[in-house]
Length: 471
Image 1 (tube, rainbow, N blue to C red):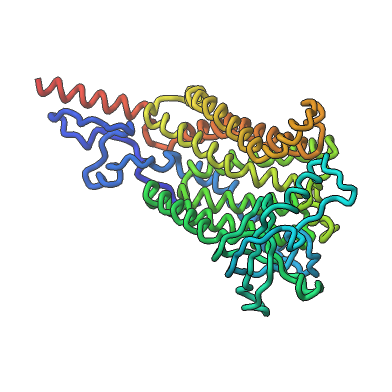
Image 2 (image 1 turned 135 degrees about the vertical axis):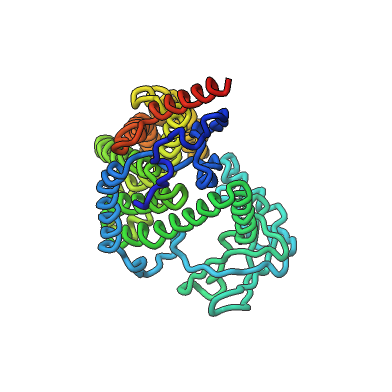
Protein backbone atom coordinates (compact mmCIF):
# COMPACT_ATOMS: atom_id res chain seq x y z
CA UNK A 1 0.00 0.00 0.00
CA UNK A 2 1.39 3.33 -0.99
CA UNK A 3 0.62 6.68 0.60
CA UNK A 4 -2.72 8.13 -0.21
CA UNK A 5 -3.35 11.71 -1.19
CA UNK A 6 -3.06 13.44 2.16
CA UNK A 7 -4.94 16.48 0.90
CA UNK A 8 -8.14 14.41 0.90
CA UNK A 9 -7.77 13.64 4.58
CA UNK A 10 -7.55 17.25 5.72
CA UNK A 11 -10.62 18.83 7.33
CA UNK A 12 -12.33 21.57 5.36
CA UNK A 13 -12.30 24.89 7.18
CA UNK A 14 -13.63 28.34 6.46
CA UNK A 15 -10.21 29.99 6.79
CA UNK A 16 -9.69 29.94 3.04
CA UNK A 17 -12.45 32.53 2.53
CA UNK A 18 -12.20 36.07 3.79
CA UNK A 19 -15.28 36.83 5.90
CA UNK A 20 -16.42 39.71 3.67
CA UNK A 21 -16.22 37.81 0.38
CA UNK A 22 -18.87 35.46 -0.96
CA UNK A 23 -17.92 31.82 -1.17
CA UNK A 24 -16.86 30.38 -4.50
CA UNK A 25 -18.71 27.39 -5.94
CA UNK A 26 -17.31 24.09 -4.84
CA UNK A 27 -17.31 22.47 -8.30
CA UNK A 28 -18.68 19.18 -9.52
CA UNK A 29 -16.66 17.02 -7.17
CA UNK A 30 -18.32 18.36 -4.07
CA UNK A 31 -15.06 19.58 -2.44
CA UNK A 32 -14.90 22.85 -0.62
CA UNK A 33 -12.37 25.32 -2.04
CA UNK A 34 -8.81 24.37 -1.20
CA UNK A 35 -6.06 26.57 0.13
CA UNK A 36 -4.57 28.73 -2.66
CA UNK A 37 -1.19 27.17 -2.09
CA UNK A 38 -2.65 23.76 -2.87
CA UNK A 39 -5.08 24.71 -5.59
CA UNK A 40 -3.47 22.48 -8.21
CA UNK A 41 -4.03 19.37 -6.12
CA UNK A 42 -7.78 19.96 -6.13
CA UNK A 43 -8.21 21.63 -9.48
CA UNK A 44 -8.84 18.41 -11.45
CA UNK A 45 -11.80 16.09 -11.49
CA UNK A 46 -9.81 12.87 -11.87
CA UNK A 47 -11.23 11.18 -8.79
CA UNK A 48 -9.24 11.95 -5.63
CA UNK A 49 -7.72 9.24 -3.49
CA UNK A 50 -9.66 7.61 -0.70
CA UNK A 51 -10.68 10.05 2.04
CA UNK A 52 -9.89 7.61 4.83
CA UNK A 53 -7.69 7.91 7.86
CA UNK A 54 -4.15 6.69 8.25
CA UNK A 55 -5.38 4.06 10.69
CA UNK A 56 -7.83 2.57 8.20
CA UNK A 57 -5.18 2.55 5.49
CA UNK A 58 -3.02 0.52 7.86
CA UNK A 59 -5.87 -1.95 8.37
CA UNK A 60 -6.27 -2.38 4.59
CA UNK A 61 -2.52 -2.79 4.19
CA UNK A 62 -2.48 -5.39 6.97
CA UNK A 63 -4.89 -7.48 4.90
CA UNK A 64 -3.49 -6.96 1.42
CA UNK A 65 0.27 -7.00 2.07
CA UNK A 66 0.28 -10.56 3.51
CA UNK A 67 -2.00 -11.66 0.67
CA UNK A 68 0.27 -10.13 -1.98
CA UNK A 69 3.32 -11.62 -0.27
CA UNK A 70 1.74 -15.08 -0.25
CA UNK A 71 0.85 -14.75 -3.96
CA UNK A 72 4.34 -13.84 -5.10
CA UNK A 73 5.99 -16.39 -2.77
CA UNK A 74 3.66 -19.00 -4.27
CA UNK A 75 4.72 -17.94 -7.77
CA UNK A 76 8.37 -18.27 -6.78
CA UNK A 77 7.83 -21.75 -5.30
CA UNK A 78 5.81 -23.04 -8.26
CA UNK A 79 7.80 -21.23 -10.96
CA UNK A 80 8.20 -23.85 -13.71
CA UNK A 81 11.19 -22.53 -15.64
CA UNK A 82 9.59 -23.37 -19.00
CA UNK A 83 7.35 -26.04 -20.47
CA UNK A 84 8.67 -29.61 -20.26
CA UNK A 85 10.12 -31.09 -23.44
CA UNK A 86 8.35 -33.97 -25.17
CA UNK A 87 8.55 -35.93 -28.39
CA UNK A 88 6.18 -34.49 -30.98
CA UNK A 89 3.22 -36.70 -31.80
CA UNK A 90 2.57 -35.13 -35.21
CA UNK A 91 -1.13 -34.75 -34.35
CA UNK A 92 -3.12 -31.50 -34.30
CA UNK A 93 -1.14 -28.58 -32.92
CA UNK A 94 1.62 -30.89 -31.78
CA UNK A 95 3.35 -30.80 -35.16
CA UNK A 96 6.58 -29.27 -36.34
CA UNK A 97 5.73 -26.33 -38.57
CA UNK A 98 7.61 -24.03 -40.91
CA UNK A 99 6.74 -20.95 -42.95
CA UNK A 100 6.19 -21.15 -46.71
CA UNK A 101 4.92 -19.27 -49.74
CA UNK A 102 2.97 -20.21 -52.84
CA UNK A 103 5.33 -19.51 -55.77
CA UNK A 104 3.22 -20.92 -58.62
CA UNK A 105 -0.41 -21.83 -59.13
CA UNK A 106 -2.06 -23.57 -62.07
CA UNK A 107 -5.49 -25.02 -62.73
CA UNK A 108 -5.65 -28.72 -63.61
CA UNK A 109 -8.30 -31.38 -64.09
CA UNK A 110 -8.89 -33.14 -60.77
CA UNK A 111 -9.01 -36.52 -62.50
CA UNK A 112 -5.52 -36.04 -63.92
CA UNK A 113 -4.00 -35.58 -60.46
CA UNK A 114 -6.16 -38.23 -58.72
CA UNK A 115 -7.38 -35.64 -56.25
CA UNK A 116 -10.29 -37.84 -55.18
CA UNK A 117 -11.94 -41.09 -55.98
CA UNK A 118 -15.57 -42.11 -56.37
CA UNK A 119 -16.52 -44.85 -53.88
CA UNK A 120 -15.80 -48.34 -55.33
CA UNK A 121 -19.51 -49.17 -55.26
CA UNK A 122 -20.30 -46.14 -57.37
CA UNK A 123 -22.88 -45.07 -54.79
CA UNK A 124 -23.43 -41.30 -55.03
CA UNK A 125 -26.56 -41.20 -52.86
CA UNK A 126 -24.56 -40.03 -49.84
CA UNK A 127 -23.09 -36.53 -49.45
CA UNK A 128 -19.59 -38.03 -49.40
CA UNK A 129 -20.17 -39.91 -52.65
CA UNK A 130 -21.60 -36.86 -54.43
CA UNK A 131 -18.73 -34.70 -53.23
CA UNK A 132 -16.18 -37.25 -54.41
CA UNK A 133 -17.81 -37.47 -57.83
CA UNK A 134 -17.93 -33.66 -58.20
CA UNK A 135 -14.26 -33.41 -57.26
CA UNK A 136 -13.37 -36.15 -59.72
CA UNK A 137 -14.83 -34.20 -62.63
CA UNK A 138 -14.06 -30.65 -61.42
CA UNK A 139 -11.09 -28.29 -61.74
CA UNK A 140 -8.40 -28.38 -59.02
CA UNK A 141 -5.55 -26.03 -58.20
CA UNK A 142 -1.98 -27.27 -58.31
CA UNK A 143 0.11 -25.05 -56.00
CA UNK A 144 3.91 -25.06 -55.88
CA UNK A 145 4.91 -24.13 -52.32
CA UNK A 146 8.41 -23.05 -51.28
CA UNK A 147 9.58 -23.72 -47.72
CA UNK A 148 10.87 -20.47 -46.23
CA UNK A 149 12.31 -21.56 -42.88
CA UNK A 150 14.03 -24.55 -41.30
CA UNK A 151 16.64 -27.00 -42.54
CA UNK A 152 14.94 -27.39 -45.93
CA UNK A 153 14.65 -23.67 -46.69
CA UNK A 154 14.19 -23.18 -50.42
CA UNK A 155 12.76 -26.64 -51.04
CA UNK A 156 9.50 -26.83 -53.01
CA UNK A 157 6.60 -29.28 -52.96
CA UNK A 158 3.23 -29.66 -54.67
CA UNK A 159 -0.09 -29.10 -52.92
CA UNK A 160 -3.38 -30.06 -54.64
CA UNK A 161 -6.42 -27.99 -53.65
CA UNK A 162 -9.83 -29.46 -54.49
CA UNK A 163 -12.61 -27.11 -55.70
CA UNK A 164 -14.76 -27.69 -52.60
CA UNK A 165 -11.95 -27.27 -50.06
CA UNK A 166 -12.68 -24.64 -47.37
CA UNK A 167 -9.18 -23.18 -47.70
CA UNK A 168 -8.19 -21.96 -51.16
CA UNK A 169 -4.67 -20.79 -52.09
CA UNK A 170 -3.56 -17.82 -54.19
CA UNK A 171 -0.31 -17.08 -55.99
CA UNK A 172 2.20 -15.41 -53.65
CA UNK A 173 0.20 -16.27 -50.52
CA UNK A 174 2.16 -16.98 -47.33
CA UNK A 175 1.25 -20.27 -45.68
CA UNK A 176 2.08 -22.46 -42.69
CA UNK A 177 3.38 -25.93 -43.60
CA UNK A 178 3.65 -29.03 -41.45
CA UNK A 179 6.85 -31.11 -41.50
CA UNK A 180 6.78 -34.88 -40.91
CA UNK A 181 10.42 -36.08 -40.85
CA UNK A 182 9.47 -39.79 -40.79
CA UNK A 183 7.26 -39.62 -43.91
CA UNK A 184 8.49 -40.34 -47.47
CA UNK A 185 10.34 -37.38 -48.95
CA UNK A 186 7.51 -36.36 -51.30
CA UNK A 187 5.02 -36.37 -48.41
CA UNK A 188 7.08 -34.68 -45.69
CA UNK A 189 5.57 -31.23 -46.23
CA UNK A 190 1.92 -30.17 -46.47
CA UNK A 191 0.02 -26.90 -46.15
CA UNK A 192 -2.02 -26.75 -42.95
CA UNK A 193 -2.99 -23.06 -42.75
CA UNK A 194 -2.43 -19.58 -44.15
CA UNK A 195 -0.11 -17.06 -42.50
CA UNK A 196 -2.19 -14.37 -40.77
CA UNK A 197 0.56 -12.64 -38.79
CA UNK A 198 0.50 -9.34 -40.72
CA UNK A 199 -3.28 -8.62 -40.47
CA UNK A 200 -3.29 -9.68 -36.83
CA UNK A 201 -0.30 -7.43 -36.07
CA UNK A 202 -1.94 -4.48 -37.84
CA UNK A 203 -5.19 -5.03 -35.92
CA UNK A 204 -3.27 -5.19 -32.61
CA UNK A 205 -1.47 -1.94 -33.48
CA UNK A 206 -4.78 -0.22 -34.25
CA UNK A 207 -6.20 -1.46 -30.94
CA UNK A 208 -3.20 -0.15 -29.01
CA UNK A 209 -3.36 3.21 -30.80
CA UNK A 210 -7.08 3.64 -30.08
CA UNK A 211 -6.60 2.73 -26.41
CA UNK A 212 -3.77 5.24 -25.97
CA UNK A 213 -5.49 8.03 -27.92
CA UNK A 214 -8.71 7.72 -25.91
CA UNK A 215 -7.35 6.58 -22.55
CA UNK A 216 -4.04 8.51 -22.67
CA UNK A 217 -1.87 7.56 -19.68
CA UNK A 218 -4.58 5.30 -18.26
CA UNK A 219 -4.78 3.58 -21.63
CA UNK A 220 -1.00 3.16 -21.74
CA UNK A 221 -0.98 1.63 -18.27
CA UNK A 222 -3.84 -0.66 -19.31
CA UNK A 223 -1.78 -1.92 -22.25
CA UNK A 224 1.22 -2.50 -19.98
CA UNK A 225 -1.03 -4.44 -17.58
CA UNK A 226 -2.32 -6.49 -20.53
CA UNK A 227 1.22 -7.42 -21.56
CA UNK A 228 2.05 -8.40 -17.97
CA UNK A 229 -1.13 -10.51 -17.78
CA UNK A 230 -0.16 -12.45 -20.90
CA UNK A 231 3.36 -12.85 -19.52
CA UNK A 232 2.01 -14.37 -16.28
CA UNK A 233 -0.25 -16.65 -18.32
CA UNK A 234 2.42 -17.88 -20.75
CA UNK A 235 5.46 -17.90 -18.45
CA UNK A 236 3.87 -19.14 -15.22
CA UNK A 237 0.34 -20.54 -15.44
CA UNK A 238 0.61 -22.72 -18.56
CA UNK A 239 4.12 -24.13 -17.96
CA UNK A 240 3.38 -24.79 -14.27
CA UNK A 241 0.29 -26.82 -15.20
CA UNK A 242 2.31 -28.78 -17.77
CA UNK A 243 4.97 -29.44 -15.13
CA UNK A 244 2.34 -31.22 -13.05
CA UNK A 245 1.37 -28.57 -10.48
CA UNK A 246 -2.24 -28.50 -9.30
CA UNK A 247 -4.16 -26.48 -11.94
CA UNK A 248 -6.48 -24.91 -9.35
CA UNK A 249 -3.62 -23.71 -7.12
CA UNK A 250 -1.72 -22.38 -10.13
CA UNK A 251 -4.80 -20.60 -11.48
CA UNK A 252 -5.62 -18.97 -8.13
CA UNK A 253 -2.04 -17.75 -7.64
CA UNK A 254 -1.67 -16.60 -11.24
CA UNK A 255 -5.06 -14.87 -11.33
CA UNK A 256 -4.32 -13.13 -8.03
CA UNK A 257 -0.98 -11.88 -9.37
CA UNK A 258 -2.66 -10.57 -12.52
CA UNK A 259 -5.36 -8.91 -10.42
CA UNK A 260 -2.89 -7.16 -8.11
CA UNK A 261 -0.61 -5.94 -10.90
CA UNK A 262 -3.37 -4.85 -13.27
CA UNK A 263 -5.58 -3.05 -10.73
CA UNK A 264 -2.82 -1.18 -8.91
CA UNK A 265 -0.99 -0.32 -12.12
CA UNK A 266 -4.12 1.05 -13.82
CA UNK A 267 -5.82 2.68 -10.83
CA UNK A 268 -3.04 3.54 -8.39
CA UNK A 269 -2.08 2.55 -4.86
CA UNK A 270 -5.20 3.89 -3.16
CA UNK A 271 -7.79 2.66 -0.71
CA UNK A 272 -10.31 2.71 -3.55
CA UNK A 273 -8.24 0.21 -5.56
CA UNK A 274 -7.64 -1.89 -2.45
CA UNK A 275 -11.37 -2.25 -1.89
CA UNK A 276 -11.77 -3.37 -5.53
CA UNK A 277 -9.00 -5.92 -4.98
CA UNK A 278 -10.73 -7.29 -1.87
CA UNK A 279 -14.09 -7.51 -3.67
CA UNK A 280 -12.47 -9.31 -6.60
CA UNK A 281 -10.69 -11.73 -4.28
CA UNK A 282 -13.91 -12.65 -2.44
CA UNK A 283 -15.68 -13.24 -5.75
CA UNK A 284 -12.84 -15.38 -7.12
CA UNK A 285 -12.98 -17.56 -4.01
CA UNK A 286 -16.74 -17.98 -4.47
CA UNK A 287 -16.26 -18.90 -8.14
CA UNK A 288 -13.59 -21.43 -7.22
CA UNK A 289 -15.80 -23.03 -4.57
CA UNK A 290 -18.92 -23.23 -6.75
CA UNK A 291 -16.94 -24.42 -9.75
CA UNK A 292 -15.32 -27.21 -7.77
CA UNK A 293 -18.66 -28.39 -6.36
CA UNK A 294 -20.56 -28.43 -9.64
CA UNK A 295 -17.74 -29.85 -11.77
CA UNK A 296 -17.59 -32.83 -9.40
CA UNK A 297 -21.37 -33.11 -9.05
CA UNK A 298 -21.95 -33.03 -12.83
CA UNK A 299 -19.06 -35.47 -13.45
CA UNK A 300 -17.37 -33.12 -15.91
CA UNK A 301 -14.04 -34.56 -17.02
CA UNK A 302 -12.81 -31.54 -18.96
CA UNK A 303 -11.81 -33.86 -21.83
CA UNK A 304 -14.37 -32.78 -24.41
CA UNK A 305 -12.65 -32.30 -27.78
CA UNK A 306 -9.59 -33.21 -29.83
CA UNK A 307 -7.42 -30.55 -28.22
CA UNK A 308 -8.11 -31.58 -24.63
CA UNK A 309 -7.77 -35.22 -25.68
CA UNK A 310 -4.35 -34.47 -27.16
CA UNK A 311 -3.28 -32.68 -23.96
CA UNK A 312 -4.38 -35.67 -21.88
CA UNK A 313 -2.56 -38.03 -24.23
CA UNK A 314 0.71 -36.08 -24.07
CA UNK A 315 0.51 -35.30 -20.34
CA UNK A 316 -1.66 -37.98 -18.69
CA UNK A 317 -0.86 -36.69 -15.20
CA UNK A 318 -2.66 -33.38 -15.76
CA UNK A 319 -5.95 -33.15 -13.86
CA UNK A 320 -8.32 -32.21 -16.71
CA UNK A 321 -11.23 -31.34 -14.39
CA UNK A 322 -8.86 -29.09 -12.43
CA UNK A 323 -7.80 -27.52 -15.70
CA UNK A 324 -11.47 -26.80 -16.45
CA UNK A 325 -11.89 -25.12 -13.06
CA UNK A 326 -8.74 -23.08 -13.66
CA UNK A 327 -10.13 -21.87 -16.99
CA UNK A 328 -13.36 -20.76 -15.27
CA UNK A 329 -11.42 -18.71 -12.69
CA UNK A 330 -9.13 -17.06 -15.23
CA UNK A 331 -11.98 -16.42 -17.65
CA UNK A 332 -14.03 -14.65 -14.97
CA UNK A 333 -11.19 -12.44 -13.75
CA UNK A 334 -11.33 -9.80 -16.48
CA UNK A 335 -15.03 -9.07 -16.10
CA UNK A 336 -14.74 -9.18 -12.30
CA UNK A 337 -12.11 -6.42 -12.37
CA UNK A 338 -14.46 -4.25 -14.39
CA UNK A 339 -17.41 -4.77 -12.03
CA UNK A 340 -15.52 -4.24 -8.78
CA UNK A 341 -13.67 -1.13 -9.97
CA UNK A 342 -16.90 0.38 -11.30
CA UNK A 343 -18.80 -0.24 -8.07
CA UNK A 344 -16.00 1.10 -5.91
CA UNK A 345 -15.75 4.24 -8.03
CA UNK A 346 -19.52 4.71 -7.82
CA UNK A 347 -19.42 4.63 -4.01
CA UNK A 348 -16.51 7.09 -3.88
CA UNK A 349 -18.17 9.53 -6.26
CA UNK A 350 -21.45 9.36 -4.35
CA UNK A 351 -19.56 10.12 -1.17
CA UNK A 352 -17.87 13.13 -2.78
CA UNK A 353 -21.21 14.39 -4.06
CA UNK A 354 -22.78 14.13 -0.59
CA UNK A 355 -20.22 13.67 2.22
CA UNK A 356 -23.03 13.48 4.78
CA UNK A 357 -24.25 10.11 3.46
CA UNK A 358 -23.71 7.22 5.85
CA UNK A 359 -22.68 3.70 4.85
CA UNK A 360 -26.27 2.46 4.56
CA UNK A 361 -27.33 5.34 2.30
CA UNK A 362 -24.18 4.92 0.20
CA UNK A 363 -24.85 1.21 -0.20
CA UNK A 364 -28.47 1.75 -1.24
CA UNK A 365 -27.53 4.39 -3.81
CA UNK A 366 -24.61 2.44 -5.27
CA UNK A 367 -26.45 -0.89 -5.41
CA UNK A 368 -29.00 0.71 -7.75
CA UNK A 369 -26.13 1.43 -10.12
CA UNK A 370 -24.88 -2.11 -9.58
CA UNK A 371 -28.20 -3.67 -10.59
CA UNK A 372 -27.95 -2.05 -14.02
CA UNK A 373 -24.38 -3.30 -14.27
CA UNK A 374 -25.44 -6.83 -13.31
CA UNK A 375 -28.06 -7.00 -16.05
CA UNK A 376 -25.65 -5.95 -18.79
CA UNK A 377 -22.69 -8.05 -17.58
CA UNK A 378 -24.66 -11.29 -17.23
CA UNK A 379 -26.15 -10.83 -20.69
CA UNK A 380 -22.67 -10.14 -22.05
CA UNK A 381 -21.24 -13.32 -20.54
CA UNK A 382 -24.03 -15.57 -21.78
CA UNK A 383 -23.90 -14.17 -25.30
CA UNK A 384 -20.09 -14.41 -25.37
CA UNK A 385 -20.17 -18.11 -24.50
CA UNK A 386 -23.10 -18.73 -26.86
CA UNK A 387 -21.22 -17.04 -29.69
CA UNK A 388 -18.12 -19.13 -29.04
CA UNK A 389 -20.19 -22.33 -29.07
CA UNK A 390 -22.39 -21.33 -32.02
CA UNK A 391 -21.07 -24.00 -34.47
CA UNK A 392 -21.68 -26.66 -31.83
CA UNK A 393 -25.21 -25.40 -31.21
CA UNK A 394 -25.85 -25.47 -34.95
CA UNK A 395 -24.85 -29.13 -35.06
CA UNK A 396 -27.36 -29.95 -32.35
CA UNK A 397 -30.01 -27.96 -34.19
CA UNK A 398 -29.33 -29.86 -37.41
CA UNK A 399 -29.66 -33.15 -35.54
CA UNK A 400 -33.05 -32.00 -34.12
CA UNK A 401 -31.86 -32.72 -30.59
CA UNK A 402 -34.07 -31.69 -27.69
CA UNK A 403 -32.97 -28.93 -25.34
CA UNK A 404 -32.52 -31.47 -22.54
CA UNK A 405 -30.31 -33.70 -24.68
CA UNK A 406 -28.21 -30.76 -25.79
CA UNK A 407 -27.71 -29.47 -22.25
CA UNK A 408 -26.90 -32.94 -20.95
CA UNK A 409 -23.98 -33.49 -23.35
CA UNK A 410 -20.64 -32.72 -21.73
CA UNK A 411 -19.64 -30.33 -24.51
CA UNK A 412 -22.57 -28.04 -23.69
CA UNK A 413 -22.71 -28.81 -19.95
CA UNK A 414 -19.15 -27.51 -19.60
CA UNK A 415 -20.17 -24.18 -21.12
CA UNK A 416 -23.31 -24.02 -18.98
CA UNK A 417 -21.33 -24.56 -15.77
CA UNK A 418 -18.68 -22.09 -16.92
CA UNK A 419 -21.29 -19.43 -17.70
CA UNK A 420 -23.46 -19.86 -14.63
CA UNK A 421 -20.63 -20.16 -12.10
CA UNK A 422 -18.92 -17.10 -13.55
CA UNK A 423 -22.18 -15.17 -13.58
CA UNK A 424 -22.93 -16.03 -9.94
CA UNK A 425 -19.49 -14.74 -8.96
CA UNK A 426 -20.05 -11.55 -10.93
CA UNK A 427 -23.48 -10.93 -9.42
CA UNK A 428 -22.15 -11.58 -5.92
CA UNK A 429 -19.24 -9.18 -6.46
CA UNK A 430 -21.62 -6.22 -6.74
CA UNK A 431 -23.12 -6.26 -3.21
CA UNK A 432 -19.85 -7.47 -1.65
CA UNK A 433 -17.72 -4.74 -3.21
CA UNK A 434 -20.38 -2.07 -2.66
CA UNK A 435 -20.68 -2.94 1.02
CA UNK A 436 -16.90 -2.92 1.50
CA UNK A 437 -16.54 0.41 -0.29
CA UNK A 438 -19.41 2.02 1.66
CA UNK A 439 -17.91 0.93 4.98
CA UNK A 440 -14.40 2.06 4.10
CA UNK A 441 -15.26 5.43 2.61
CA UNK A 442 -17.56 6.49 5.44
CA UNK A 443 -15.69 5.07 8.43
CA UNK A 444 -12.76 5.93 10.66
CA UNK A 445 -12.45 9.71 10.38
CA UNK A 446 -9.09 11.16 11.54
CA UNK A 447 -9.07 12.06 15.22
CA UNK A 448 -9.65 15.74 15.89
CA UNK A 449 -10.84 16.42 12.37
CA UNK A 450 -14.31 17.60 11.53
CA UNK A 451 -16.38 15.09 9.64
CA UNK A 452 -17.66 15.83 6.16
CA UNK A 453 -21.11 16.82 7.30
CA UNK A 454 -19.76 19.09 10.04
CA UNK A 455 -17.31 20.66 7.62
CA UNK A 456 -20.07 21.29 5.11
CA UNK A 457 -22.27 22.89 7.80
CA UNK A 458 -19.34 24.99 9.02
CA UNK A 459 -18.69 26.18 5.48
CA UNK A 460 -22.33 27.11 4.99
CA UNK A 461 -22.41 28.94 8.34
CA UNK A 462 -19.30 30.97 7.65
CA UNK A 463 -20.58 31.96 4.20
CA UNK A 464 -23.91 33.01 5.75
CA UNK A 465 -22.19 35.14 8.39
CA UNK A 466 -20.05 36.77 5.70
CA UNK A 467 -23.09 37.74 3.68
CA UNK A 468 -24.84 39.21 6.74
CA UNK A 469 -21.81 41.32 7.61
CA UNK A 470 -21.53 42.50 4.01
CA UNK A 471 -25.12 43.67 4.01
